[in-house]
Image 1 (tube, rainbow, N blue to C red):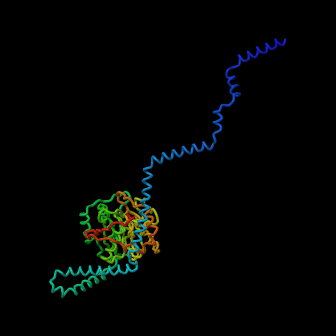
Image 2 (cartoon, rainbow, N blue to C red; image 1 turned 60 degrees about the horizontal axis):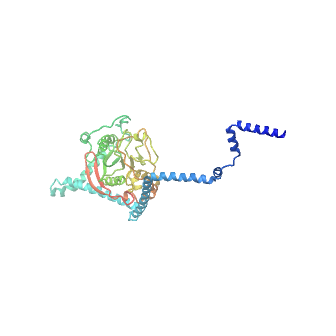
Image 3 (cartoon, rainbow, N blue to C red; image 1 turned 60 degrees about the vertical axis):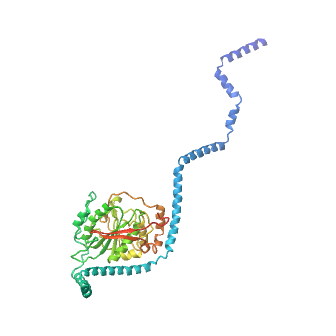
Length: 438
């Protein structure tokens, strides 16, 4: 009986094994077989090793980027080293200039006034001497003193007969052209014919009244002949309608060396002062054309920034320290701040330096309304400004430098002075920049 029962049990087991699917057997083995050695290794990797692996990948990627751009980064780094070296040379050059027996500003102003009066006396003496050269030697000795005395007396009496011009000129037109107007093109010969009332050298004064203001217009210039013609075409009539006693000086730098606008303006200031007793000086960019003749070029009480609204800047003042473009200043104020700094080689920032000088001696800058102080900038190729690091270094020390760096220390050579019908041309050699300023 027991034997028969065991036989039936074994038969049932065989049947169950035959009907069991293969996947179940595999699942059974999967759940019950021991874990392989590879799974053990995968579970035992520390997280720090994975982190180091990714860091290694990041380092490789960055190194590849540096290799690709190595030439660019190398150039920038060498340029930075060069700038740092030039800044160091600038410091050394300024120390040499300061120690080169620079005359104190107070003594220089006194000598400047003495020399100016001597130049004017010499000019007056030569003028009257040339007038009397047409007579013979005997008549010169007999009539020269009385001629000089009579001429001065006649001039004085003519001044007494005329009255001063009105404070508000009556011939002003207001806006010359609107925003969409075009600038006229005219040749130099046509202008000379139209402005025949202008005396040689670009000088004019009203004949029906005595001008209240004696103004020198100084235009720093380089390779802008067409712009100069356009400016003269518009500027002469405006100054005449404003009834000013004026003269226009064009100060040009000789050669193609590094441009120094400040030295050109300082040199023209010194020369113009020796020629005539000007009350104020207008430093005028050659590419700015006035749009309104109510923007007065007369001598102001305080320094006046005239080019407030320029079309290139959407007729807005870009920053408060801006006094470049067209700037009007009295002689005593210009001498008080020692003029422009001579250290700005290249384009830009000499006007900002002058603003800080004026601020140092508590001279405020005034501005006409932007609706009147409008200028149009003539189209031209923009020049690359000097390196900002150098300009910033100079601007930072502008207030401390003005007592020894300026018109009193300007170094230049007057190459030639020619009086043309519409302007006086001053050709100036400014020399080479000191080490670190090129």
